[in-house]
Amino acid sequence: MTTLTTSPAADVLERLFADAVRTGEAFRARMARTPAEGRDARGSVDSRAFYAAAKDTHLAVSRDTARLLYVLARSRGARRVVEFGTSFGVSTLCLAAALRDNGGGTLVGSEYEPTKAEAARRNLADAGLADLVEVREGDALESLAHDLPGPVDLVLLDGAKDVYLDVLRLLEPRLAPGALVVADNADRSPEFLAHVRGDARYVSSAVGDDVEVAVYTVG
Image (cartoon, rainbow, N blue to C red):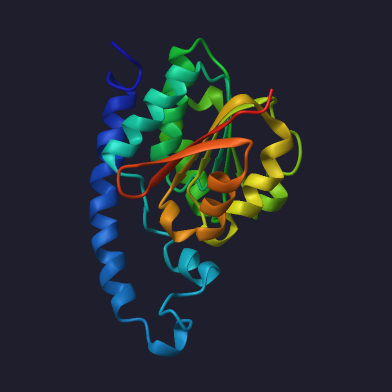
């Protein structure tokens, strides 16, 4: 029996996955109607505009990735976790469940949209995990620049892909030897991939179609 697979956390997680399907379908339909002038040369919407438009959309990790996060955090024996891109708290819940089962710890999450941050806090409270998590609002490059628990055992990158590398570089001085860095949708951040695959301090591997897991080998 684990915190992740038993009530109340499991019940909240199922609700959030159902909400993610519903809001995701509506969001994709809305984005398909975004005019060409709202997109860049690659056909993508500006990241800030994208996340503003997605303020009611869960943008959650997949079920497989959710379980992977729990497995990685448990295996690492993580006690200190930092998350970039909390959204409504699906990944946060899985990581916090691992912290609970590891005997406790601290997760600092960051979320640009205040309404999502508040919803995540409610969801974590419903799951019985709020005491392990601090969700900070605003730009992650500011909110994660101070007062972090350390050394950090695991980092999850799941916010704006164009700043994955900036966030990782911000956190690198705080990483514990053997820390894990997990990036969802990593193929959308080529600069990040080049860094963790080319820097001798990391050993990195793709997991599935869109997740990268790197070990920080310093120490």
